[in-house]
Image 1 (cartoon, one colour):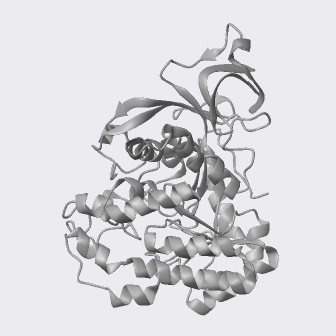
Image 2: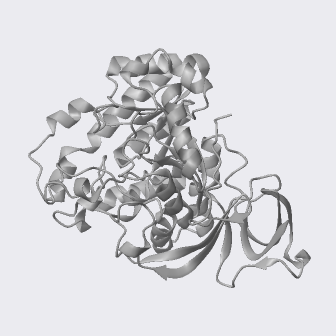
Image 3: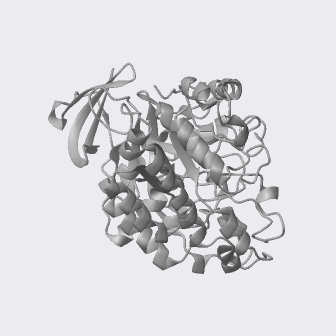
Length: 438
């Protein structure tokens, strides 16, 4: 048994002075601070106690492309950022997680190396349609699809009629479809020659690509009554569509990512392909609207979309945004990055933390995570909200030392992360558990 004494712990959305008892990996008591015993573990004056973060959008890439990332390095980075649970995307690993056999391979890889708890998304690709329920019964949290080319040949996108077929199939067992929503016809119409100038890349992936794809998903939900989730929303023009769909009673949710909330198009230098992602980072006015969407509840939560690659791929083409790999490695810095911008905007820390914890946990059905409450998992993060940091290459825990967050001044440092009541030690034997949807 361990007791943690904190002058400020986030309990049900408010800060409270508490003594929290941890027993066999669970929170077994939340008492007034005055009840803390003499041997309690006491937080420093500048620290607050948070629930462990739950990141439902992470590309670990193992097996098959472990040189891009891997469970050991990804989960070490997660713990360094206060993340105690992540859900792994079905690509860019080989094999992709599109059937129970591939899921077993992925689970075996994670079991050897995971320092935090790990769950898995399945994939909805043309070849897996008609057999999705087998993968659902094997424990995946839902099914990812692309509506435009994914960037890897082994995970092809769904055409419109295939999207409809997937929604029909999933509605029969109430499965969840999570969607990379960009329309291929819009992308084709706006294709350009690329180059080192970032605005040209943004022009090649306009907001219309997202709104057209989201309309197709919403039309499918109206027809089937099913469930869908919009991944990594970057286009503020889609917010009215999502708000209207929610008001209509459609079962749709949406996420955005730290890079869309803290970076803007005008500040990305020519050739700086570490900022490339799809859909792209847009202008400041769009960013302001995304913040309003989060605060209004149209966007449900924030996730990293950690999508690393080797430096060779990330800087391919000598700064050509069309040639470089599209994905931002940011798993380690999501909370400090968003909190830095939130402070500037007057958004309180308790609001920000909810976007990374309870909201993501509840979305995934992990109601024992993302909160400090009796009976919840003893997954916790000790955070110093006023401490500065400026990430350097030597600070990075993920495999390849490339990140858009390098050399940016951030506020907020995760000092310790506890999984099931014990501090995560990257050098120790992995203790992460494998999670099923149930």
